[in-house]
Image (cartoon, rainbow, N blue to C red; front, side):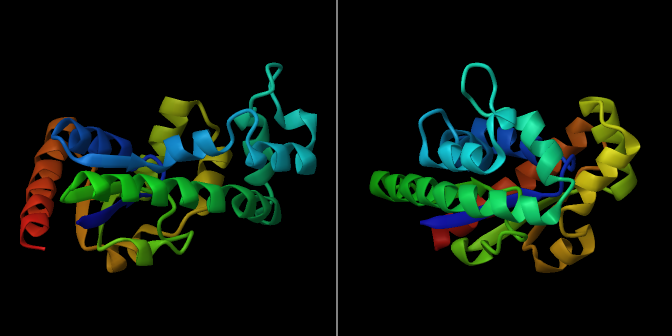
Length: 202
């Protein structure tokens, strides 16, 4: 089984590529979904988060108030590291279980959508890396337009990840999302076909 890591800096368009891959039939393991599952009400991770940061990061129904927690961790690298130490091990456990399930089904190609693949030191878990990228200024513009972030908040989120050049140097396939959605789909299809071919020959 070929396990591929799909990653990209924030607002680069990784989610759009993931949707294409899923629509074309690939087994997709979504780190964002795993992260939500990891901190669902009643989980050890959510208990640890509330123990550290208090009820201020909990919504009225007891679920995680992501916006409140985000304001804390993006303002302080130490706090972000503390959050990662709580959430990442549980996400890793859930990912390993999902990969094992795919292997048990006999899947030939699995794509793990991992936003912080490089930053979290997870490159050793995959057989190859697909990077979705876009220029810094364009990603900042998308964050401000689509998420309503201020210029400062958008820059803070971008600064929290590795720069594009560093990721490009380590990626096996690069999809540039500085054009139209149709252009993105064409590039995604070409990479998808390459992954399928490698999975067959693996």
